[in-house]
Amino acid sequence: MEELNKVDSFKLLMLKQQVISQLNLDYQEQEDSFESSQEIKSYGYKFLKSNRGVEINLHIGESIWLSVYLKKEDYSEDDANDFVEPTFNLEYWLWNNGYLFKKNPFKLTTYSTEFEQQVLGFFSFLGKVFKYKELKKILDGKIWNDGYFDWKDKGSYPVYDS
Image (cartoon, rainbow, N blue to C red; front, side):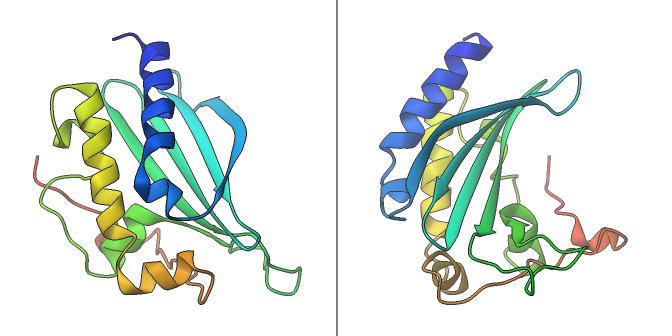
């Protein structure tokens, strides 16, 4: 399946997922396409509510993987400082909060060899993760977590079996 077909298929499959509709977030009818490097093309999809958001990025390169960011949309200038954006990477948050996985759940080949089954497998994983008590509170707008990540601490990076 060529890249654009995968992008279109991903979007169609993503928008049908119950985990997405249960968040009660509005899909922003925009798809950001950006080159993260010469070998990797990325596509971003944003879902927002008055005070929270989820951004899902599809990355296509030698392999295909996803990144998911949770966003706080209702912060004021007093809340923000020069070093912390009210956004955190879900993969790193899971790792730093003790949710460890043998295989990388953000890499689509973890789930299957068929693209559609890979996408469905990922959203099944995401549905389970979004039910975690603290993440549910974050997604419901009841609490916020700055998603601490120490770039110098190698223990902060998720490590998976190959």
